[in-house]
Length: 432
Ligand code: AMP
Ligand code: ZN
Image (tube, rainbow, N blue to C red):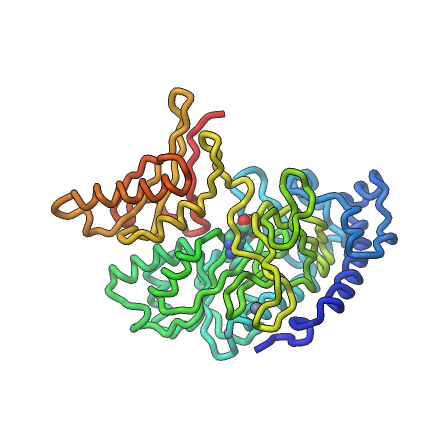
C-alpha cells in the first residue's frame, strides 16, 4: 500500500526534524544563486542562522515576478553544465517561467510522482495512457517518468486527437489515464458519438485528474461515465510539476509531500499565516531541489489545510481541492466570484452538458456576466419551451449563489471552443 512506508508514515516530530535539516541545506544552497545571494545580503539573512522551522519567516516570499525578473538563470544554484532538463509554466500572460533541473532533481521528482501513483493503487502491470501534452509542460514528462518508475507500461499519447485516444485505450487495454478534467468531459461526448461505452468497452480503472481547478461534481461525472476511480493531482512547474500533492484512496484532500516541501498558508492581503483549517494562499518551499531551489513561493492557489490525521496512515498533511488562483477571482459589481463556484452549480443541474464559458462585458459603466452553457441535444429539438425552462432554472441557481444575475445562454453540445490543454473558462472583455 505504501511506496515508501517509512517516509509516508513518519511521525510529525521526525518529519519536522527532517524538514529543518533539509531547509537549512536548501537555504544555504539557494544563497549560491544570484537572486537569493543579493536578497540575503540586502536584508541581512544569514543561512547559517536558520535554527528552527519558524526561522523560515526571516526569508521574504518569492513571487512569480521575481522569477520573471531573474529570467532565465538568476535562480540557478549550480553551474549550467549540471543541468539536464528545463520545463516551463503554462502561463498565458507574460513571459513563461522556466525551471531547470539537475539529474538529482529529476530523480527526486520522479520518486514523488511514483509515490503518488502507487498510493492510488497503480502498479506494475498497469497500462498507463498519459493524455497530457509532452514538452515544456510538466504534466507529460513528469507523469511519464513516475509511471515508468512504478513499472507500468506507458502509452505516451499526448493530448488531443480524441478518436485515436479511444482507439489506443481499446487496443491496448489501458487501465490508468492521466487527463485534464475539462478534456475528460469533452472526450465523453466523443465516446457517445462513437457509441462506445467506456464502462463496457474498456478496461479503465483509475484516472488522475489535474492541471486545472475542477469541482467534486465534475469528478463524480467523470467517475460515473468512465467507470473509474478518479484522483485529484495538484502541482505546479515552479515546484517541479505533478507530484506535489495527491489524493489517497480516501479522497478527502490531497496529501502534500512534506519531506519535499514546506507548506505555509497565508492571508494573501496581510501575508500573515492563517490557522490550520482556514483558507488562504498556498506558499511552498523546495527542500530537495539543487538546481533551482525556490523559497517561500507564493503559488497564488487558494486552499486550506484539512486538520487532523488521514485514515490511510500517512502523516503528511492534506490540502483541500484548489478553489482557484487569487488572480482568477472575478470582481463584478463588488462581488467576488471564482469560476469554480459557477462550475459547481452548473454540473449539478440535470440537462447541463460538458462545457461552459463565462464572458464579462462592460456597458454604460455597468459590468455584465454572460454564462454560455452547453446542454443536451434533446433540448434543441421540437418544442423549445423546455429549453427556456432550463435557462431560467440555471439563471435562478446561479443568482442565488453568486448574488448577481448573469445572462444565461444555452448552446448545443460542442458549440463552445474547447482546449486541448487547460480550459479557458473566462473571457474578460471589460476595458480597464
Ligand atoms: P503550470 O503552470 O502548468 O505549472 O500550472 C500550475 C497551476 O495549475 C497551479 O498553480 C494551479 O493553479 C493549477 N492546477 C494544477 N493542478 C491543479 C488541480 N489539481 N486543481 C486545481 N488547480 C490545479
Ligand atoms: Zn490519506
